[in-house]
Image (cartoon, rainbow, N blue to C red; front, side, top):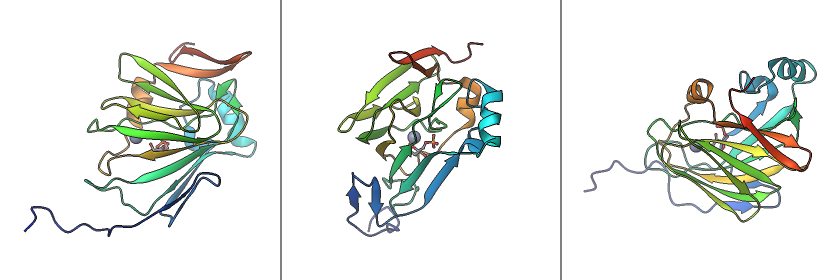
Length: 192
Ligand code: M6P
Ligand code: ZN
């Protein structure tokens, strides 16, 4: 007899539509509006103004039905809208995995980047369709849309990895990604 309890989900195939950026069958969908990103943009007044002026959707996350529980491997597609708030490129909240497990991302549409921070060093990977970004254990991760179109990527991660958002509020992400005249520019996270 297996040392493990029976798996809560049977083998299944999931249709991955890289054009529509959807998974089918679909699990939970998360929509993050500007108001959900409190404390994350450098310019708090500009963030507040964006919340007051329509509270736009910054990104959404559609998941497959594979549950976020230990030993499972859930997948999700995140789509970040193009935009900036006081010059800071629209992004995900970013999180650390409390138990320091790794994760992989696969770019599927648009131009984006993966900003990582291990508490000491930061790293940046450009992500375009076809790029696999590897997030090693212990690196907090945030995704950024650096283009003019929606940016979508597929994530595959250990179901028990969890999402520690307070870690980012406390430690930052090392750097921030700003829209520059010739593309992206970076500033220190706690600058200003
Ligand atoms: C990816 C994965 C998810 C994560 C999502 C949005 O799809 O890493 O686990 O939830 O991005 O990022 P965040 O949770 O930081 O808002
Ligand atoms: Zn993660």
